Image (cartoon, rainbow, N blue to C red; front, side, top):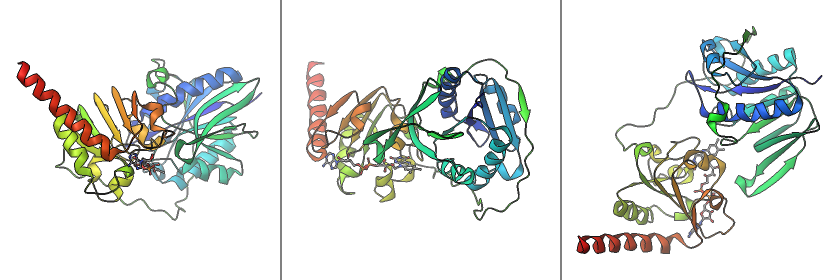
Length: 330
Ligand SMILES: Cc1cc2nc3c(=O)[nH]c(=O)nc-3n(C[C@H](O)[C@H](O)[C@H](O)COP(=O)(O)OP(=O)(O)OC[C@H]3O[C@@H](n4cnc5c(N)ncnc54)[C@H](O)[C@@H]3O)c2cc1C
């Protein structure tokens, strides 16, 4: 009899993350196909109460320790290795976010098994697992059959709808006591809060978002013009923030802000999974990219395969002319 399917229930500062529910929904499908139970695994300190919100799982296992109060991947990997050796699950699904991006690889190394990262789906046919894993920032997809048990799989956000992984049931909860020595060479210092004072991009209805394709700080003005015409704000992908062309508070994505505007214009953004995680639920996505193969076109409702330097001023002009026509008609 194969071991269970485990989902690491990711919590951030005492709150379960949405991706936990997405991965629980996937885990349920895999567990059902394998004919085993789905177990949620909670790691942290004083987190037992979160188990109530994990009703999609058949049961919840939790490890409570002061060393798990802050997310240090090495320490989490030690704790999870201990739990896996004790309970021998067949599949371990790890939600991929900033918090545990490194966890899967550390865990697999400690257990001396393989690791399949960036999975956008997992299926099970006749007891065999098949994963679809993204490579090169989403430009290639690899089909991987993890042969070993436990199969350690890093799961990308958006794998299933969040609501599919929520259930009202109260699963049985069990504690596993773990002894953790504070041996990690990594020390947690503090949380860096996003600087206050700037606008909150999560509250904007229109966002014009720029990526590396905008090429320079000066060109960001083209996006500001369009955002101004549309009554919205400018934001960007991580490289734009890293270059200092926009403040950190304007970063969209995994390590930035999650936005859901009515309109999201992605200008010169490739559509890496970490960016898409932050904007995929926008009502209307318009992507402008000179590369017809850019993954952003997979999530966009409308795609413009052209140079942003041409398209942004053209769109701004079109919005202004439309406003003029409306003004005269009124
Ligand atoms: C743990 C982790 C967390 C991360 N968190 C985030 C995050 O929160 N947010 C985020 O955005 N990224 C994040 N990243 C980085 C992410 O993986 C990508 O590297 C990043 O999103 C790429 O940004 P980009 O699309 O602007 O740049 P690129 O991938 O370099 O894409 C630039 C795009 O512009 C197009 N282009 C170039 N010139 C033009 C032109 N003249 N006209 C039109 N199109 C043009 C190109 O075809 C290309 O598609 C994270 C990565 C990791 C590992």
